[in-house]
Image (cartoon, rainbow, N blue to C red; front, side, top):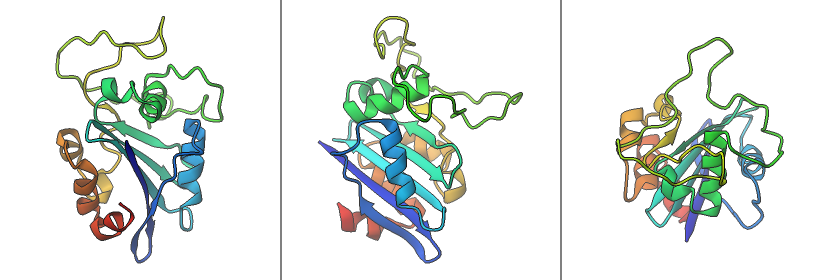
Length: 182
């Protein structure tokens, strides 16, 4: 069972809406859904969780490249929506979509690339996409700093578990609006 919500930043705070995943068939669909919730091209944070096993955060700021974080890539890779995120983060998305040529790691050409995967040191032989795909790390994957400027530090994001989306909403000051769509 999934829970998904969009938090759109406005002049008056955050607005939340339930994210209907029935029509989402690709990561592009998910990004389009997030962008459509934006107020004046301001920040939208899409939150997805699957039964406290993993959570994902997608941040969209206007027309800038989206940024992603998944709490446990190996568990997320085993689910339909989580696999969209992990494939994108590992660069093994075989679908041709509008995002295939974008630099999603947040760096500019010539900049040093941030650490993309954080593991607990254990080997994980799970793979995304079969032959030739990078192994999926057992821990977090993506940009843990995507919410730093909004009040959720990368250290906090890396250690969340259980009811992570509520803790994120609390740090953003959006607890009441998120709970209203739960």
